Image (cartoon, protein in one colour):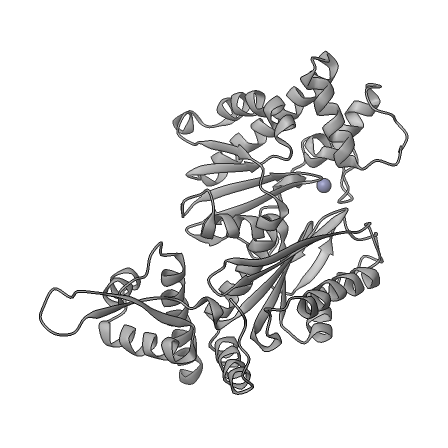
Length: 422
Ligand SMILES: [Zn+2]
């Protein structure tokens, strides 16, 4: 028991130090690490020595110390210590991104596919995606790959590594898909899975627009409607790992059928497929599948609205009102510093933005009004995949075992005369 506790404390301290150095905007001194983490200077010295020996940290430039004698060397993450891979699954394509240990994207590519597919087909396709990226990238020393993160739309139990429901999967027999385990055993590297909006929230917290704010709501509006919550600087997953699935908030009893199997979910009224269905019902878009994708049809409807079609404009305004009302209620629930809305093509978000902002203000409790900024933009899929990679970096930072394993491989690799090219 005492042994276990000591290992847990050691993992926690390792995470605290790496996390602090990782998120710093410049190299940091040992004194700064001590101040930020609350660890004693001897503890910081011992830990940073170990992380320097393993290769996870490196010494950056020197700066003059205030006294006579030693010059203090600042520390930073060594980008070449390990690589991680992120895969983001979407309805009609997936994106694969490789990042170095400092989280910088070294390689990224997109592949078209057709979903929904069977459980078996998904495991096969994602396995191939990971393996072909391992083989094709010249800079990737296989042994330096510390792990793979897969961002999955839908209900994902990240604790168990299971997909409970996803729009990229055909309705099966109701059994969850143990995706993390299936992929790990096939590719020979640890694979972690997580809901895609959570991954994006993590990428935003580390590298993005939230400016390291500790409490952020991130809304993703694309084919579906997603939500990721950062609470007190950490992703909020709840007891079951399924928290923040508020896109499936029921707004109408016995309402429109949603892809998740329920009726009346907000997603069934505001997601791209729902807006396209409204355009079809109004006779503005061909009702039969004309071979184009939902995203093309959504864009086409936005173009019609932009040209002044009143019916099309009304559809986007209603989408904005419903979305804004819901975002206002999310603010009432969690009181974030800001809300980020990854809103799909700018052409469409320009159309619904005024009604989102108005409805959000109306729905927020009066003390919140005018105080919670809403940022609407669209980031490419690479950012989502980078979020998936960030999850793996977080897991490496947290685990002395993975760290030791990468470090050992690193020595083997160097003995073989091969290091990843920068
Ligand atoms: Zn639903």
